[in-house]
Amino acid sequence: METTMESLDAIMAAYEDRNLSPTETLIMKAIWDAGTDISVPELMTIMKERYDKDYKRTTIGTFLLRLSEKGFVKSYRLGKLSYIRVVKSEAAYREKLAVEQTDFWFEGKASNFLSALCNSKGITNDDAEKIQEILDGLE
Image (tube, rainbow, N blue to C red; front, side, top):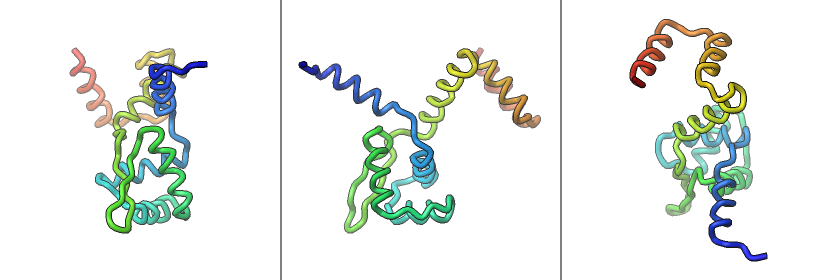
């Protein structure tokens, strides 16, 4: 069976578009929160201090490889240290998740999603004002 470049590109795009596992999510949150490239030792420290996860270097390396294959990060070496650079932004991933969840749970209707959010979490007056500003900006 012959595989075309187009089908390979489609396969890779689908693979890269997969959601993150819970551990990958924690690692990406730590990387995104850093706001800049982060070394592997720094990442290991953050994982231990913030999330009480004492991962070995090899475990972190495995997760970073998966994140790289999914198109979230790129790694590079500088001297003796490996660094991680964000490729896919946190905002882009959050938006993707919001759309997926809205489509799956709320019949694709943002109003149903917002209603569930407001009913389950309750909203402050400040939240309500910000939501109104967003809605007013759509006109």
